[in-house]
Image (cartoon, rainbow, N blue to C red):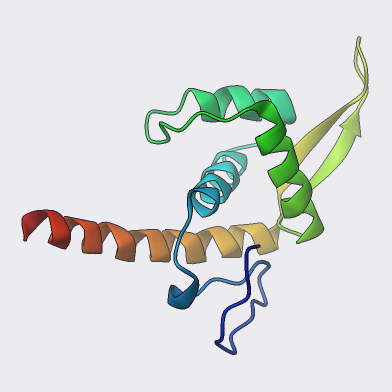
Length: 124
């Protein structure tokens, strides 16, 4: 979802991921959002509240950051939404797609590699 790199592996499963591009806080937020949606469907504000209270994600964002990310993930086919009518205004309820689940697997592998590198760095 960020800049283009020089490799030829431009993603079949949504946004491109390779070592050349590195890993940003936005990539981590993407992984966190997909991870939370893999546990069940949620409307945007519920997802925002959950992400804001996660112990493993200490970074705080404005709601607009999350809604912008959800639009991007939807455009890439990683999440989808349905409109739910209720007592108030209609709201979008988001769910992770199969493509999103595959991309989350890729991100988990990459994050594991980063974790191992960080641990080696801290031990040096």
